[in-house]
Amino acid sequence: MRNFHRDVILFLLAALPGYLVVLLLYGLLIPENLLNANLTSKRTTAGMLARRLEEANSYGAVDVLVIGSSHAYRGFDPRHFEAAGLRMFNLGSSAQTPTQSKVLLRKLLPQLQPKLVVFEMFPLSFSLDGIESSLDLISNGVRSADLLRTTLNQNNLKVYNTFAFHSLVDFMAIEIGTRKNDPLDVYVSGGFVGRTLQTNSPKSKEKENWVIDPFQQEEFEECIQLIQKAGCKLLLIYAPVNKSFYNSYTNQDQIVRNLTKGYTYFDFNTLVQVDDSLDFYDAHHLNQRGVDKFNSILLPMVLKELQDSVRNNTR
Image 1 (cartoon, one colour):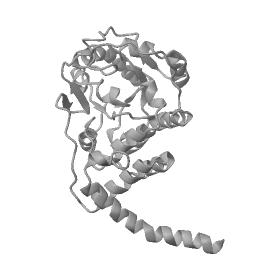
Image 2 (cartoon, helix red, strand yellow; image 1 turned 180 degrees about the horizontal axis):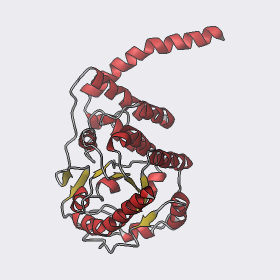
Image 3 (spheres, helix red, strand yellow; image 1 turned 135 degrees about the vertical axis):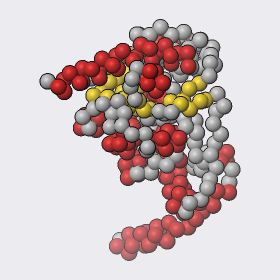
Image 4 (cartoon, helix red, strand yellow; image 1 turned 90 degrees about the vertical axis):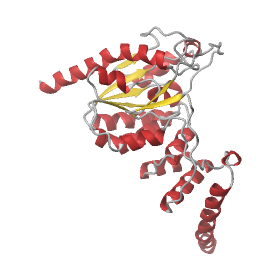
């Protein structure tokens, strides 16, 4: 048995260099559309994460930090906050689950030093496996020890390959391709991605239940611990989505109550009047007109949270 274990270890050590060489050549030479099942070999641009992370590294301290899914970087506009005298940065990313939120908070919370963290609470983010979001972070330069642990937990071949490939090309300073940005998207300093006034055609949606992954709920609690340990105030926000989308999930209230128990939480689907056609560009993402409506209602609440925090700290 000892000989067997020794042989297995020796085989793995001998095979590893070959795997890395094949992976590197595979990612560099094969068109990405033929790699989709096994590897993300280009920098992804759907949410302009690379640009957001580059800006975050030199952005400095902020009043407000927003974290969450695409509803974060497409829903919270720094220009509205600036007009109210607040410096804000948006750390949202596509399909971000609490697992990736934790990685980004650990990486950037110390240097952004927010007074208030707004956590965008799209319930679907708590039911995803996080693979799409991990691929987004890995391909855009986030490969910390925390993300390595996430990669091992996800135990997914495409995530392993993407992590190894991008680590190799960065180590060897090899230039690789980047996917083209959506021409309808506009990046705004502070991490926001605006969408031109494209509208939506509402469609009915079948009723269903959301099932929360217990692991993501645990990761969410760890995110809150990180935020509180940093001395930041916390505000949980459910950004507006299309009414047919919102009403199709029959257990939504119960799930949100379980997740937000004990924390300040606002569901803006019940607080802001948005038009399912004119204020969205798809079933659950606001266009700029919708963002403007949402942010105008949000800002007084953010200002109140910050003022309450200041009063509490001066007592």
